[in-house]
Length: 483
Image (cartoon, rainbow, N blue to C red; front, side):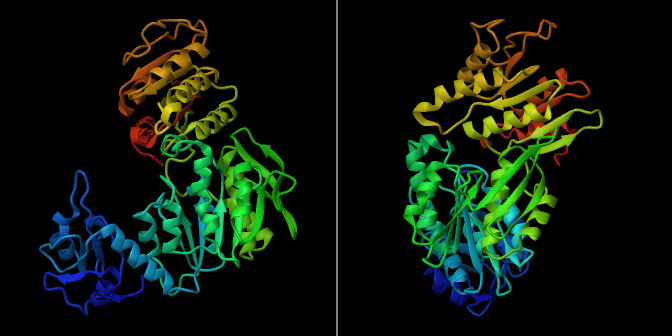
């Protein structure tokens, strides 16, 4: 970050110095919210959470090298005391971004694929200059300003994710670091219950393009009608990407290898080049196209875009990580999160990668789907039950609709009357062709169950909502070490 004295931080955040804080002491960064991440020159931001109160670690943070604590009450350490630490963090990041007019901000939003697209675009912009991008999915009212505060006078690009849990969230994030380029990937079913419908989701995602200046660029998915309609909501220039003939940045001649990795011809107004992705699954085409379109608008040559995208591997964990165990079992760890759209994509990837092999899946009931939750989870069960699996494990609570849908799609053999009981195996591995469907309470039990079934050469997909922590299942299947 740009070095700032505590007096200036107090001014920006409307705070008051406390605990014998030296107004001339300079914060050089990083700004952190976990006391374990504190280093010399840090500013520790104390949040009072449901389980842990950061204020209790204030003195420890200063002993570890923090210059001061940004706190909502006096602490036993030098501090800037503010009424609301989240609002103060946003104010600090807003002032920070305003002091970096030469940094181009690119915002990325969408119901799925934000993190992968961000990782790909950050790789591309790094070819043109120093780039700041979030670690993982730092895309909310806390992670977003923390990412912005990593920038300094050398930063040329900030590639930022913007998430929305309700109307107005993205608008608030764009005020912290106003984007010059806005990328909208898709409008799907993530957080459907929170928003109440896809039209409301589109309204929220479109706040990104509304924030663009007239001199900016909106990069929109031509293949998603709700995204394409956002062109009417901005005065910025619009560039379309996708497989549609109307897209200026297109994927043509798409092929998929036996591992589920796509290759395609990247076609642009100034030329074309072949891309062979190392990323798995069909959504990687959309994500890489979006990154290519944004990089193209920033002036990166098409040949360079294609070369970089062809070498890119996953940077963020638990998103279509494909690992082959020494015994030939393949584990697909896509456990970071899940919604109906991403579940369909994951099962499609499993079908491709697992062609000619025994396939298994560990899933969990989807959440935040509102009044459509039962129906959509039943659909998930039907998807899994009809996927030609050799075995299915459903982990965690609220699994009844998933189990019922899976049982119906699998043909109805077995103990249909008791699908709601934990540890209920609806069929067995009797060799009759029936698919076993098992309900277990947690990620550890899921790994134990699948391990009983697996033999060399099998493939297992692990995917569920964030709250279920199914990456632990993948970790156990891989011998205790995720990749």
